[in-house]
Amino acid sequence: MKILIDHGTPDARNFGDLAMIQALVHTLRKAEPDCELGLLAQTPSAFPEHVGEEITIYNTETYWPLKNFPVAPLRLPSWLRHMIYLWSRGSVQRQCRLRSSARRRRCRPSVQQLMHDEGFDGLAIAGGSVISHTFLGFTELLFNELLAAHRQGLATAIFGAGIGPVDHALLLQWCRQVVPELTYLGSRECAQYQEMLDGMKAGSFGEVTGDLALAHPKLTGQPAKAQPLGDLIGINVRATYYSKIEGSAADDLGQALRSVADRTGMKPCLIPINRHAEEGDHRSVGRLMGWPKNADGLLGLVSTVDDLLDRIKHCRLVISGSYHACVFALALGVPCVAVIASDYYQHKMVGLFEMFGLQPSTVDMRQADFVQRLHQEVDRYQTVNDKQRQGWIERAREQAELVEAGVRRFVGAST
Image 1 (tube, helix red, strand yellow):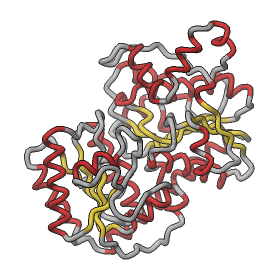
Image 2 (spheres, helix red, strand yellow):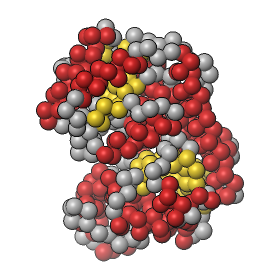
Image 3 (cartoon, one colour):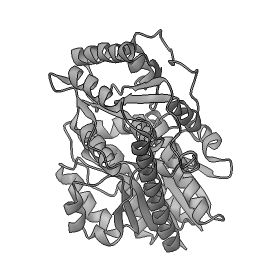
Image 4 (cartoon, rainbow, N blue to C red):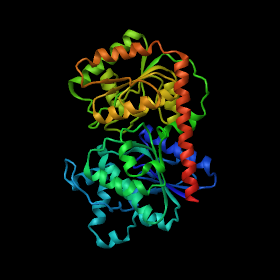
């Protein structure tokens, strides 16, 4: 059996994306030890140390993006949106060079041809905001791959899918075309879009499993009993166009974070999820906390998902503006407070806390009293007890088991 994995991530510099890929590789190996795995990636050299040398890495620059769907504009013109997404995968210059030569263009295969020539039995998408208009180019690319796989009769699955916001007619059209043909669909949160999925008859092959990263071997292999909390306060801030943490509100957040650290006596440390040079979490956190340039907070550099999880274990509390910092913290029994400034992150964070049986512990920076709310949420989690933390760890294990069961269903359909 041969399975092709894609996530759409251009490289290995986002620990959330990387953890999901590692979790899927681990669960596929667990379900079928002899299966052959392939991974689509824009930087093949970055992945072997994280996923193993035995996995074949296919360079996305070698293959033309599939274009099975009509393209319509979303605020930006369609050509500009497409070029921006290709640039994010590092392939614009090569695309332009190849398009200038009809002969070279004809020699470049598509991902559909790759699946056919390599004899893949299934295509698995490793989590992420797969069904959302926030990243429409990302969704378009993955849905085109799924449609091509369906035409070849391959088994297909999306594990730990982020669903929503879904407020774009073109995206709904794609969903109606692709979702009913999936072999398996596992969504990461209690979807407010369940009615939409039911209308596509996804109920027969889909379920809410929780985030794919919860099946990471470092998390599933941790002690079942909650360990003592550390003495650090983990800080993560995602300052990008889709998080909308910016301007004077961001400055107020920085002052509030420093005030929380001073008042509680906890030492602040960076919890880096996004490590990209231009929009990395280390940049935004360092600026807000007043750390020296390129500072990585306490405890030194973090180079692997395992290193990151070990750092979170040393925390008494995590304050985060990114999704996976909260996922990892709750799975390890560490309290966390989510800082949001966009509908996109509000949807994700509320769904995450619901999956752990918690009232959403979110601080909305769009509210005038968000600094006061941050202090209130921090104080609320100062009194958390071991029984509550044990419940979070058990919830994480239950979700990981659902993910593994979904992978087994997919593997069974691929053989």
